[in-house]
Image 1 (cartoon, protein in one colour):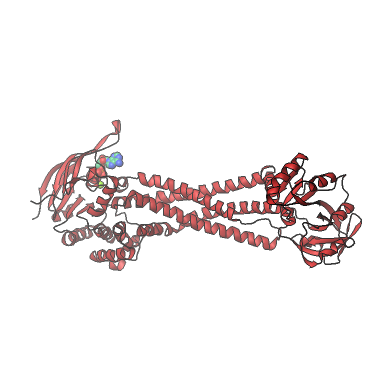
Image 2 (tube, protein in one colour):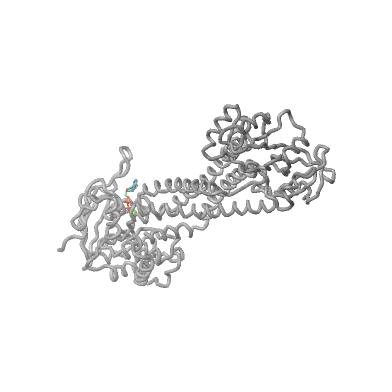
Length: 378
Length: 231
Ligand SMILES: Nc1ncnc2c1ncn2[C@@H]1O[C@H](COP(=O)(O)OP(=O)(O)O)[C@@H](O)[C@H]1O
Ligand SMILES: [Mg+2]
């Protein structure tokens, strides 16, 4: 068996033009599919940045909320009601909103403002400079050093700015796991300062962050919150809800999905077509092998090997190329939203297998049917 | 005389259906013996290649049988039929049908690889056969770099590499000049034919008739007569 595969290998690889064309087709398809799905994975992960960074186990919100940014303020009594639910260890408010920041040089920059519960500071970020206790000092804000950080003019401890005619001063620099999708920097402050500085509607609580007494209490909490007319979601559920929104309720998901399908089809047609031509041009060889005494199964193995080998090389090249491009793009544009996940890799692999499968099926059908006699009659 | 190497009886082959139905072979029977060089001679279109293909297990006849070692090869299943072609028959095709993307040596080794010899062993053996046809120094070249006569010898080396009992040549001299053609058939007769082998040559090249033991004349799908020549 090994010898026959070596022959198959030589027939394939020594036909340099065809082999190159086959590789280009598959590489191109894998490249596009991986770019698309990685971009989407990156966008999804970024769209849940606040949920990931704040890290609360359970989030209470208005049922109509689709994304973290589109929070719908809740009245204060809900906070009390949630606190009194059996199974809630503690519950604190979170303010999440946006505001324009006037920098020292006079320019305006919009920013996400997160207001943490004054007592517990639940969801506080990890500081790389400054002291968290300084958040209680006058006009204090903590800035997140993510890819949007430079938009605030690379502030240092003590850097001042204005926020709706209120003075603001940087008392800490934080790092977070995931930076946001919308390209705006993030500032943390206390809940009370946030609602004082930023004009708001009658209600001011964007989210209620809940720490359950135990994991088993979550279901009960969810039911009780639902009875209040609100929705309690675990961190994962909230992230899923956000992902679901971007996937199915915005053009984004549909477009990425379409592009992925298109790259698959383009790759399939290029590779399928080229492989078919390769088989047709080698039909005489397969016919000769048949006449010399190759069994049908041996010819099938040869074709599967040729298709599979090309697919694997093309997959490697495509993944390598797209990962390289993503890495380069991230070097230049630090907020570039693309992450290569194992799911993406597995998906592209599966698609490549489908391409190889369809191509070999067409080739095998052709080769099994040839009559060597028709070729030799001359 | 000994048991025949091949016994063909009542072979019929037609192509097409109804209006387009044409008979290529219309009931051919003959016996061939080991140690014999049998020719089939006849004009183009008389059914020679069709007949060869039925005898070598490549083309299924519409009627008749081909008995080799007491078995009708056309009663075998597809895998056994493939094994018959691999182990019993060496076919030198009219246009050689060498693999342009393989070296000359690898071309000769194909039957050995199909017989599941290890790669190196197959190459070593193939080299012996290349040497036997005097082309050892061409081993690593692609066949297209060889002359017509050399390619013919490569095809012969490949056909004999599987150590077949039955060797079949379809118009071996058709694309060679007279001298080269004669030299090749002379070589085959002296070096490749032996008591355990039967060689069937299809030709209408009268320059090589002198090497035949018997010549069957074929016309319009039937054998018109058999002529004993030479010894
Ligand atoms: N696949 C085919 N379809 C239709 N007719 C065929 C086919 N193969 C051979 N024939 C016909 O059968 C006859 C014999 O062909 P062939 O055996 O090739 O003759 P030869 O080898 O003696 O020149 C010819 O008339 C040819 O046209
Ligand atoms: Mg012919």
